[in-house]
Image (cartoon, rainbow, N blue to C red):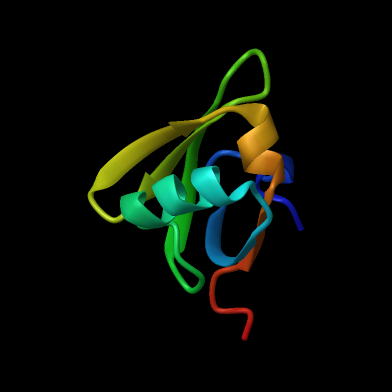
Length: 76
């Protein structure tokens, strides 16, 4: 499923990034690596998400959130 389809409170495992190379590099630098544990903290009015990643909170726009494939944490 796509990260943008998740709701606040969902705990997820990042499976794959489907973004441009430059965007992928930045996301990897922020810690968005396959296997990372994420939690959706809040949803913005225009489709963006606030995502918890470790001790950090990262705001993602809707397009980027739609390009991150996730599964429920502990699904594997």
